[in-house]
Length: 137
Image 1: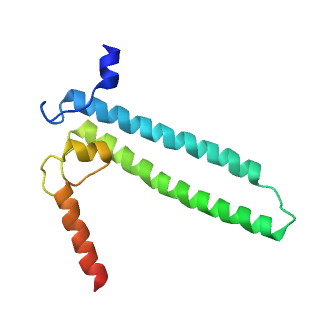
Image 2: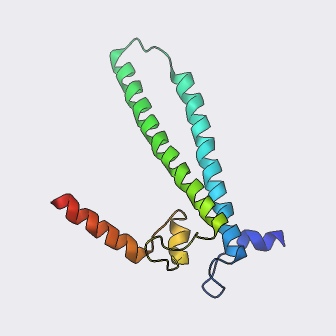
């Protein structure tokens, strides 16, 4: 039975967001979250090891630039973890997989590509068009 679970992929031929699909996306989101946290711990270790004084100004500047880039990346990942956590809550409350704007199901292909999606492709496109219009004003 375990082997079947590992190869399971949600299908349009089964009821949308049935228990098996919810379990599949929950495991996927949790694994993604765990990977991000593991990378963050490795980054902390690396930054602590790297925290040495470089006598050469160019080396110090390069090191500071690398550190700033790494910290910016970690901040983006921190925000991503928050979105993953929100998706896990939606799985638990039964709203996962449904567009926040229209209430319609988000396609399984979109959820496979972006498991934290909260909008259907159509709603996302409308949202982006509105953003472009207001940004251009």
